[in-house]
Image (cartoon, rainbow, N blue to C red; front, top):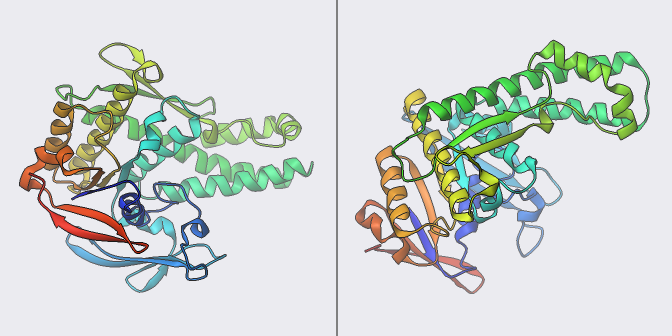
Length: 338
């Protein structure tokens, strides 16, 4: 599916709504309250029917002002993490064009979303680790000295942290195995930079040994929450951060395609792929190659751009819709892409 229209027509809003059918804050990382439009006080709600291996599931997620977002699957309340069991979802946005040159936090989130495709419980594992870490950080800031409290939290962090690392490493191996050397998109050698031990017992021990240092800093200074994802352009042995903007984006696309191929091999189900303003920084040949790759995979994809000419290479293989903004609302009209 292709959505095109002028800036501000609502293309990204539609992609964001779809992205909220997965765990987390969606493609803009917005808080639930920030998604509430005008008039204030009405909240928001998204409903959809998802097909998982031929079984249809009714999904609903919503939030009222001042309340966290809730999820219902087939009429029953469910945690956000349960959305991972219904299928994987990936996205690329213009903000991610700088993924390789900005802070490590964005790269960790990117890797964790990839890991969720192979390990649906990864989101719950990350939440478990972060919850225990927040409690430990509170003890550190309050300069609490009780070793029993620390020991219990560090044991929880060790279990969840070791699983996080194992999932991340396994994901990188699957991506490497699914890479396409003949692709027009540059392939990257990926590695996980993590000073923390991979063993749950060793991680808990390192945390215990670092209590005095962490207390001085007021936070936990070692663990998988400090890990980073490194990428080297294989063909030129060049760090991704030193590549041009176009090559950096092309490497991200190569990873998304490798992830989709790996999921197809493992589960027979490709992810839902959301590509916002995907044509930016891609020449005509690479745009055509991307469209061919997505069609070959059979992935359900939603792409946005400013005009239909950017997607002409898709021809009749995709539905095209023009979005226009009128009277404070977005309007959809089906259009051909040729």
